[in-house]
Length: 601
Image (cartoon, rainbow, N blue to C red; front, side, top):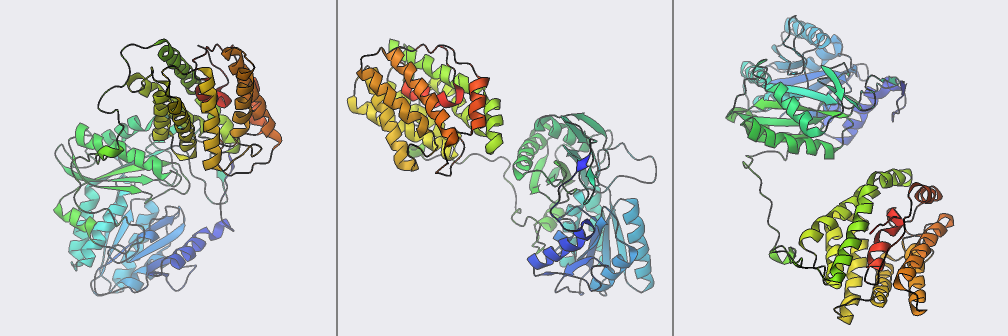
C-alpha cells in the first residue's frame, strides 16, 4: 500500500527554490542568476569568461548534482529544473548568456528526451545570437539491453566524471573543440548501473509500493523509473558481482574496457544509503575489479554524487582511464561536492599497518590453551561456552527489544562479544588458570564489542582478575568467585558513576552479589547459593521498571523498560541451573544472565 512520505520542507512546490537558497548561503562562491526563482541557475560568483564555460543541469532531485559541482575547475553553471523535470529553454539560455565568453561553452546533457530537446533548442538559439556552443550527450547506463530505437542509454552518475574531465580541460585553457572532444571521449569510456532497495518519494506525493518487502531492483533509473528486473534482496557481494559483470559485459560492449585496462570507479549513493553501506560496496568492488576482471584501479570515489531523492541504493560507474583522464580528475577544483582528497596513484594493494608489538595480544605468538584440561578447566570451559552460545542464539531477539527504546544493536554487540569469546577460548584461554581466563575474556570483549558495552564488561573482568590474583590460589573456590564479583561491581560503580537505584546493570548485580555472599556464609551448597543469586539478579532487574534512569548510557547499561522485562520473562525459558563449586557463576552467569536467562551445561 502506498503511503505519504515524510519530507523536511514547507511547500513541496518550493523545494527546489529553497534548496538553491540554502546552497548559496552555505557556499559563498556560489550564487543564483537574476530572475530567480523563475530562472533557477546556479553559477560561480566570480565567473571568468576568458575560458570555455562548462554548463550542465537537468531536473532537480539528484542533489548534489548538478549545482553542487559548480565551481572553478568544474561546472561554470548548473541549470535546475523542477524535480525530475527538464529545465525550460529560457533558463538554459539565460545560463549560457551569463557565463559564456568569446571562447564559447560546452553543454553536458544526460540522455533523456526532455533534456536533449530543451538543451538542444537553447543551444540553437544561443548560436543564432553569436555564441559558440557544443553539446555532449552522456548515456552511461549499462542496465538495459542495447538500444534498438532512438532513445539510447540513459544518463546516470558517470556524468559527474565527465563534468570533472571537461571542467579541468576548460580550466587548462583548451579551446572549445578540444574541451568538447575530451568530454565526449570521457562519456564513451564510462558505464554505470544502479541498484535500489526502495523507490523514491517525490515532494508532496505518495511513496510507491512498487518494491515490496524483501525485494530489490536492478538497473533502475535516477527518476525512479523501473529497471531491468525486480529480484529477492541479496547480500552486497553478489549484487556487486552482477553489476560489474553487466557493465563489463563483452556481449554488449558498453565500455571498451578489457583485462589489463586502467580504470577509475565511482560508488554513488542514491540518496538514502548510509556511507557505511557505500563503503562496504566499495570494499567489495575494488578487489573484484582487480582480481576477477584483471583491471588496474587508479581512483575510487565513494559518496553521494547523483541521487534520486530519498532512494535507498547505489550505482557503480567504471571509466577507462589514461594519463589525460587521470590528470583531469586530479586537477584542483572549488566545486563543493567533488571529493578533492581523492587524487594521486593508488597502491596496487593496501596492507594493514602493523600493530606495535607492545600493543599486540601477548599470546599471539602461540596458544595458551593447555593440552590437557583439569577438572576446573573443563567446568570453566563448559560454563563459558554455554553462556556465550545462549547469547549467540538470541541475537535477533535482543536487537528487536533494544530497537523499541534504543538503537537496536544490543544483540549484535553482545553477539560479537560472545562469538569472540568462543573463538578465543579455543586458542588462547589458559582454562586451567581461572584468573587468567577471566582476564582473557575481558580482552576479547574489549577488542570486538567497542563502545560503552565493551569497556563496561572489560572493567568487570579486569577487576575480577585482579581480585582473583590477590589470592594466588591454584584452585578457585566459590568464596573467591563471590569476592571477585564484589570487586567487579565496585569497579563498575567507580568508573561508570552508577549506584544502586540508578536503573543500570548494577541493580541486578548488587542484590545478586549480596545474596551470594549471604548464602555462602550461611553454609549453603554453592549450587544453591548461585541459583538463589541468579533469582536475586532477576528480581533486581524487575525492580528497575519503575525507576527513573539516572545515567545516560546505552540500553546494555540501562536495564530496559517494563515491556522489555515482560518480554524477557515470557519469551525465554529458564531451564535448571546446574552449577558446581568451581563454576564461574559470578563472572559468567551474571556476565550474561540479564540478557539470556537460560543456561544448560
